[in-house]
Length: 351
Image (cartoon, rainbow, N blue to C red; front, side, top):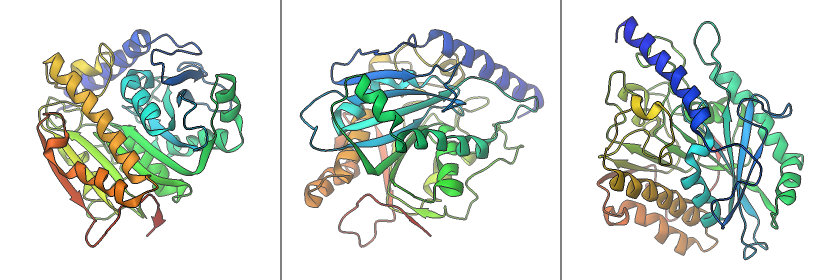
């Protein structure tokens, strides 16, 4: 890709990020379009609170009192394009995860701001995401949850790290460099992208083929067939998807939805110009089905993995190996690192 194309891409990122912030759901407390979840902000995308800076947090928590005796799992979810996308643009999927899997989802995003050298310091971003973990550990999140009507408790032993696009660069960097497992017991990667720029000229990587990552953790990997298409592509083949899958230690399920694009996971009419920059399936009905499929797949993975009945859990996880599971969406399915395993269970070890 030539220099002009790179500049166009950067300008698209700038304009689209601004559009995303303007077009996203208004940032106010107690937003609740789903009766099954409690939804609120801690800070705002452009003005985060000091304790969490540079991150703004949006929370989805289960509102049902049916599971109050079972502690809720905790998920961190990093939004796409290095956290520049408004995390509320994923509300359809994240609210479904919260209500269906008894999980408090902590969505992360931040103000669009690039330094003069136009690069993102993912190592620093991964470090600062520790402020959010501290917010959970010191009880501050629970106070916010209770203020907003949450009746349950939190499972301090089972954290999930989820992300979309380059948010996965951040989540994997956090695990590789800082987290060293510590309470995280599974990961969810949607269209993961490594690197810094579409041509790979800036050598800012967390995955270094053929080396594997230095931790062993079960993962769900969802990708799309249109990810590596476009000029420039939003997820260049050499720095996305299989770069993560092939580097993984621990059992991993890969679902490739061949007919869809990088931004198919975001809510209708959200995503700003990122949606224009990334090739997509133009059939709205099909995209709605795909988005629901993504939510259902994540829910199946979490409910199967964390099921207290291991046999029931594995039956659920085994459905991720069957094309009939995916609501008529064309998929290519792969799995790895499961040889000889009777059960796939949550957990993380350093290797």
